Amino acid sequence: MSSEKENLEEKLYTVKYNSDTESHLQPVQDCCRFCKSKACTIVCPAGVYEWNEDEHRLIVNFENCLECGACRIACEDKSLGWIYPKGNKGVTFKQG
Amino acid sequence: MTGENFENREENKVDVIVVGGGPAGISCAITIARAGKNVVLIERGKFSGSKNVFGGAIYAQPTREIFPDFEKNAPLERKNVEHKYALLGEDDSTVVSYKNTKEDAVSYTVIRAKFDRWMAEEAKKEGVIIVEETVVRELIVENGFVVGVKTELEDYYCNIVVLADGVNSLLAKQIGLRGDINPEDVALSVKEVIKLDKEKINDRFHVTDDEGCVYTIFGGSMLGMLGLGFMYTNDNSVSIGLGITLNELVERKIKPYELLDKMKSHPTIAPLIKGGELLEYSAHLIPEGGYKKIPVLYGAGVMICGDAAMFVNNLHWEGTNLAMISGKLAGETAVIALGKQDYSEHSLARYQEVLEESFVMKDLRTYKDLMNVMHDRKDEFLGYYPKKINSFFKMFTSVNSVPKTELYWKFIKSIFKDRKFSVLIKDGISLMKLLWSILR
Ligand SMILES: Cc1cc2nc3c(=O)[nH]c(=O)nc-3n(C[C@H](O)[C@H](O)[C@H](O)COP(=O)(O)OP(=O)(O)OC[C@H]3O[C@@H](n4cnc5c(N)ncnc54)[C@H](O)[C@@H]3O)c2cc1C
Ligand code: SF4
Ligand code: SF4
Image: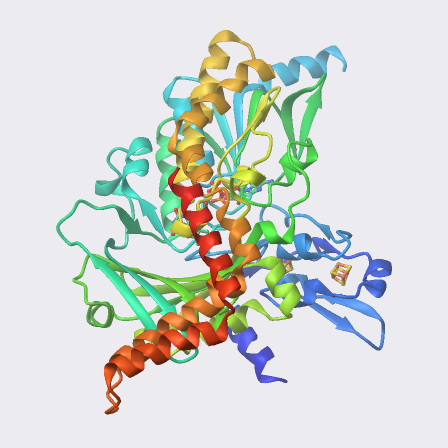
């Protein structure tokens, strides 16, 4: 594992989550395939998105989402389906 | 609608529903409850504050307007007595500082998960009904009026909905009060809370037990970028983070947490947090669009306040104060409208009128050109000149047996060598224009 990834994992380890079983983030894979910037993979502060070149698919580790909304706004063609997780799910900040 | 359904609906109906339990929503709801009206506040988090992130510091005067005794009861960390402005170069820095321990408190650091929760408890005591762990998914609109909200479980009906749902406000977008947000109109912020002994904080930041120190950080890992760093002292921890315009990250293909890690390792910053333990990492958006990006603020049966209305004064890290006061003004407007039983656009227009008279809109107007100028000339104002200021002090503090006048002339010549005379004039004109737009 790259040290960059390890580093982020260490940070995310401090965050309290109650993960849902289904994703609140729904990229439109047909759009992602043609998307040049893959902006979501750059801006996400939790490394939620990874582009899988072999499968030509955007992988979404939605359990790590910090619910900031950056990916929704940065998405190249505004195609990313984005809603807040259900009321009792997602992140609970203890400091904030 | 069948007769029975309608009766149910009338029974469940409240005067006002406020969406979002941050400073804007709570201030609004408590204002309405204090006037004896019934108000429900819906918050998606486990408790108020559990989804919220800021620098940060709350401001004493506006907070007192909502909670007159908060200084006695609220969970406050430290009273800020010193403000430092640090201009970081690659390895060097220039720090300007203002300290005043005698003056009454201007701001206090707080932990949002504790402070927002406290505010919500106070609101409950004053009669606000708070529904937690519930996401409002949609507004219910009938005959052009917003008449209620749809949550995952239930529909709730009311006379007025106040949107205090924060920067992403999907609800304001749903009813067309605002369009899509552009990446240049928000900053993404990443933050770490780092545990550090009280004594270490006191020593390193030159403060006593209850006193705090605030850093605003320019440059460093963000040299030439539209971004700003911050550091705040809490009781037993330090909050450090930065906000950077979203399009900057996309264009430069840099990850936000890498910028933060680099800032943390700068020689001016690293010793301050050395040996600390990471308590929590977090991220949040900050509205950056300013005055020009304010959405339509009201419609029939609906008003928008706080971050949802883009009320942030980013240069000063002010947001909670604008949220509280706009929430209060929306609350007062709701109370008047309830008295008249008139929830039309015309009736709620009062909200905008009183906002225009308040510091909220006045301050936002003051800085209306700031972001444009900064976007246009960031290479100059956030790259070249900050570096030059550091190199001035490098020259000024150097001792190398070269006569001082020679050093001065070399420095001045270097500016003319770096930049054409016409470019310097352009920089000067932009600066004057900016200052004029702020001061006029
Ligand atoms: C990194 C950073 C540093 C900052 N530093 C400072 C500072 O030092 N001082 C300062 O004054 N300001 C600061 N700000 C700005 C300040 O945090 C905001 O302006 C302020 O929190 C806005 O208050 P609000 O109530 O409008 O929104 P928020 O505090 O964002 O509250 C919105 C609430 O609505 C809830 N919500 C959202 N959607 C829904 C829904 N659909 N259903 C139910 N609930 C919903 C959320 O869970 C949240 O509790 C900072 C901001 C950031 C990001
Ligand atoms: S930016 Fe949008 S379209 Fe592009 S990969 Fe990400 S989700 Fe897909
Ligand atoms: S909302 Fe924020 S944390 Fe969640 S996936 Fe999008 S960018 Fe990442």
